[in-house]
Image 1: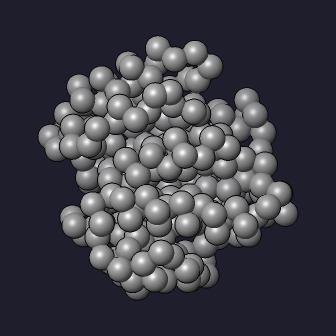
Image 2 (image 1 turned 90 degrees about the vertical axis):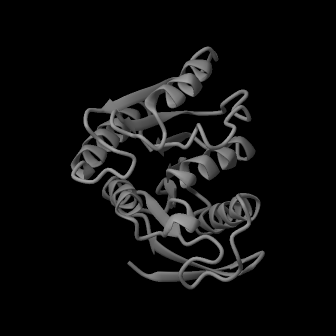
Length: 216
């Protein structure tokens, strides 16, 4: 897939872009884990998410946030990273103006940034949040959550205990008009070692279900 360079607020942003299979293909933005914990766009979970959307015909972009890989700038405690995410989504939308749907998918810190982006972009149709760090960051900004989506977590996650994610999910499920799916993978840790197949299977099945309900 071709490398792309986007102009960002802190300098260039390095990405990998897979064009859609048709002019009005839906679009998906993939966000990587925490830069200070060696998070980057080629993280196995991020790559798997990218692959799942591409297989379903989406124009898909994953990228390195500021200070990671060839992306310029320095880590900005989430503020600049959210700006980078908005820039990346702007680029994706500008290159796919006829897109039928918009999705945001993130893993760990990327899930946190992705959910913030979701709040600022009401045109988003769905989200995927894998191992969201709801015990490290305040997710109360999801009020209300503007789109239906999937939270995927592991039962053996010792970094973010499942009860912390369930607290967020239960709050979101009180809203009318959106449906929050929450799936727990038995035995999976925060890092999904030996459970990448579960990410592929569960996220793929969720996307297929949503696309069957509302074709893109």
